[in-house]
Length: 203
Image (tube, rainbow, N blue to C red):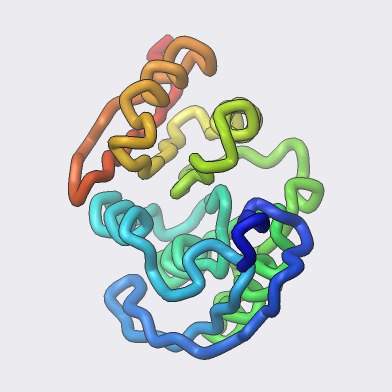
């Protein structure tokens, strides 16, 4: 990826350089395909690893969202843990979505739907949202993303976000409560990252 190109790009201009990668997801060693021009092409990044280690397993079925899926580590984990669930893997990056689709198909995960926002029906509500959100896109884009998707939690739904401490996890926690109007609690800190849990306020 060039220094001017960001992974938050619909059509990356950099060479794809597709290659296989062995990773451990949901307690299993699996082979996936990664490529340049997407987030963390070298493997499982530290923040995502913290998220996957810290968050309890999802229900066996339901409707889940991986917000900012990249090549798919979070969506694939959700699919492996809950094969009966529908897992929407959301990204703006078409190369990332193609990788996520191919990886899900290779693992036999028919419930994983890799798509842009336009592919998620308006009435869908999510039992779980797991995300390593794209903090580096800037506050305006990030806030718009969270304002759009966090309110689509089901009444008993839970969103789990991992945010690097020095990239504003504490201020983001306060912003979610003040601006989105949802409960946001820090559930763990590890390796410079914090995992935030977002739920609907008690009525």
